[in-house]
Image (tube, rainbow, N blue to C red; front, side, top):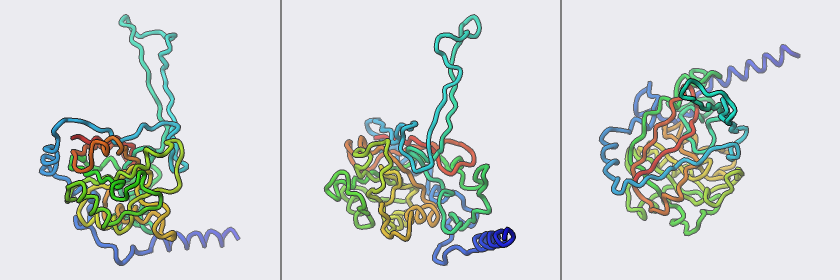
Length: 310
């Protein structure tokens, strides 16, 4: 019986390892060895133009505070321990009486405001540019698509306020926005989405939600909308929700298809749990988007705090 189970397991592994990616999955336009995806659309010219959007120098933190009570997709959690506690009882160092603290953080990096790297979600064990998991995924870290390899993003950001399009805040749970709604929001904001942009949706969901509870339904991006944004050459897409895409999914039998569309098929990065309310209050439309992803080797995701500047 034991031998039979091992044989069956080996057969399953063999089938999984030799399965082909979907026939309609296009090769990367950036070449067979491309591992950056839509980040290839970043450029010095785009950065210089985006910097020209700054008029007042007002900054908006798009990252939320992450802590032990932050709601997260299970089993993700966060914990911190402060070491060398300076509680007034320790012996200072040297005649200058130096004291200090250190800390140890034990956390998943897919928690709070985060970026999903291209190794986060695939299709039948194939990931962006049809790279099979067996070629780059190890328990010690990713050998390709690690978030530490994502270049600095200093480009034009566009905030699309979907509460205006649906005339309700928050946008009702289960509401999908696709090409028609995205085009309407861009027109209302007076912008045209272009190659190299970062697009962020404001739905009002975060402002209306208890941050310590992970909600089960949300408004969000639909598959057609994801395909449309990818066709425009955007670098990343984000929202003020934990999953970006609409929940319940447009098709119950096709979970996280927006993630697959953006990450695996097109190499477009995903930004989750973006704090958009203050920026939306200032106004929708264009801004200077700046993000330096933490350079933690081998990581699938990263906790981030992008900055919007106007």
